Image (cartoon, rainbow, N blue to C red; front, top):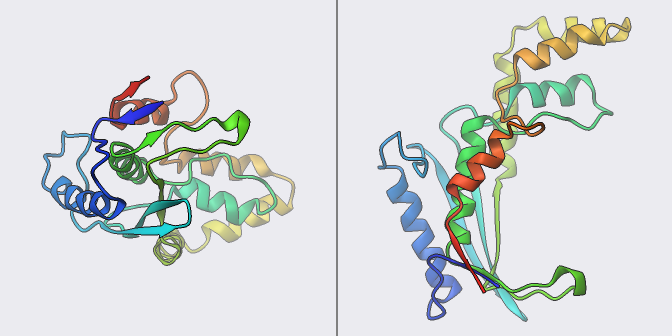
Length: 200
């Protein structure tokens, strides 16, 4: 059984959603050195919902003030449409912000689930995502900011069998966390941000 460090059985899901909204607002005033800081201009929709057998809180980023999508990942989906992308989807700051938002939800949750027996027992079901419209705008803006000949030239190189050039460009434009290997910075980020939990 895992309990977040702010878990309180007296708080309703609606109460928790209100607190998370207040914490998001307060986090934009934190100093830049604070890992829990959120950027000014960030907009997040936090919605609670009740249903038979439980409740949920959904957090969705609706506006992001800086680069959100990792250029290497976006270019990979354009140039290698039939390959699964191997780059982190978001920039380091985008991943950090999503980790902060998830940590805020986790702090109020508990999890007594047993996945092996399909038994689920949580305070609420929490999710953190980027709103589809926000992500589409970020993708369009990123592609529009690229040199106009970059994608066509790389597509020609790939058509001629020279994928090495394209993959090299992707590596150069990688602005996300490394997700493989011994220096998994994204995992280190999650361990830093996620609130401590009590284990019973």
